[in-house]
Image 1 (cartoon, rainbow, N blue to C red):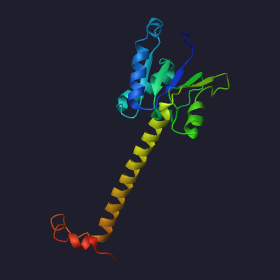
Image 2: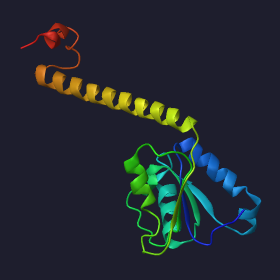
Image 3: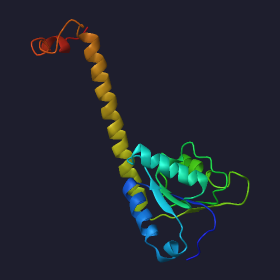
Image 4: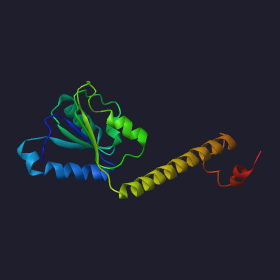
Length: 171
């Protein structure tokens, strides 16, 4: 296994993949022998963990990071030489932006994309869930706005049940 001498950023498709890959890399014999620091970053880490990981990466103490797209925004590390996609990104726009994290100082950098045919179905499923979640969130917000627009502010929570038909009356 050829290990790069500069920083490596690995994009994972999911939080679970991100953690699993980081663990595998941390336990890899050559990485351990060369004392290469590995960590992961995604949206479910605590704010303290996120800050520590970001700081370590920015200062060059963390050489290999596995992350979801949650890490990418606002990252400007000019000397990152490798960006690796461990799976297909969700979109071509994501791929373009994520690949742009490598070689920001103008020096040679490499982007590598690994993928399997199963990635397409995983992405399709993830996007479908995101769309469904987004639609539910919009629907809840819309219902809240409707309720506050239709129910006068002097109604209390207790009397909402008595006045339920009022909510369904259309103008």
